[in-house]
Image (tube, rainbow, N blue to C red; front, side):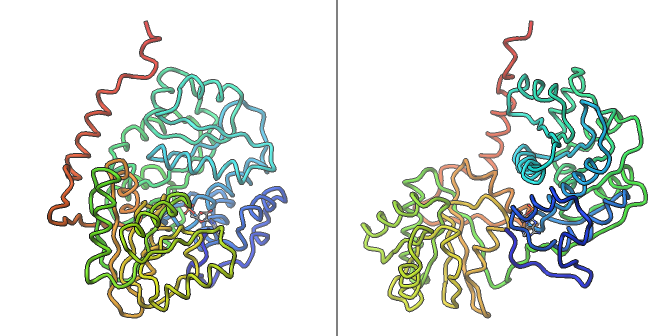
Length: 416
Ligand code: AMP
């Protein structure tokens, strides 16, 4: 959940000010959203006015709810009896589509609105079946949707609202022509919203011009800014054993006075702490299950330098605000860019220089790319003498692309 976003003068204090349906307000409250984020404050009223919207907003700004809330309100205001989707949300990747679909389901929880998702990597037969059960909101990646359109399995002629999310990334991935072809299958007029982390590239501008009609333009300062005092670096690991060796080396370096090592799960944090202790590193674990008194005691020991390394989960690390943390190490990469920013913001405070390190295995490279997209910057890869990985990022990417091409189609067997 976002807890610190810049407010604008016209940021409404509450969601009630948008005149949303009670079932939507209930779902919004259940998500723990107390007041709209800046992108929501600006995009929701514009979209409710049924004008086109061009929004520069990155992940972490609350952009998903900014388009899902007005889409749901529209469907509640204008119910119609068709089995075909009326709202289409396009996303460049399967991961993002899954995330958006989860958002749709959570916010539609108290309504009759039905949603479906179409992306590669899932069984197409099941996706067709879900679609047949009638759908109001369809979340899709362009490639699989185009394929299903070709096979006449989706009808887009009832689309009244189109959202394109992460348009810049879509164009980077070469999905522009597929999206354009898809849009040609929508016969009538539709309202459109185009969201992109940046609006500065000529590609995005042209794309927006072709799709949108006199859009309202909204530019949100991304909360992806972090202190320039933080030096970020990635070390590639072959496997977990190699990763542990890298971690030990970094923690034993003279420059490392005080470090937080982040793990995504409690169990992993516990196991890693035990390992570090067995290697004579002064380490403690901090996860959400400790009672407050124990947490405070651990934090105190860490802050006063009695413990050098705190192995923590994200929830537990809240409140670890201190000036002298020299290293933040992502033993596990976080799932989202905004969490990454939160993590690395724990070092480099108050003019001090801090180092933030990612330990990355091959299978983490996609997550790393996503974080870099969120930051709009690439993170350099470093090497530690004697602990170099047996691959490079470039080679891993090429191998992955090759493997993807070779993969036999899942239902190829069924075809005659
Ligand atoms: P997004 O930019 O859509 O990926 O959202 C980033 C995070 O912000 C997600 O965890 C959302 O659940 C959360 N979020 C969205 N809207 C709000 C809000 N109004 N208040 C607090 N958190 C929010």
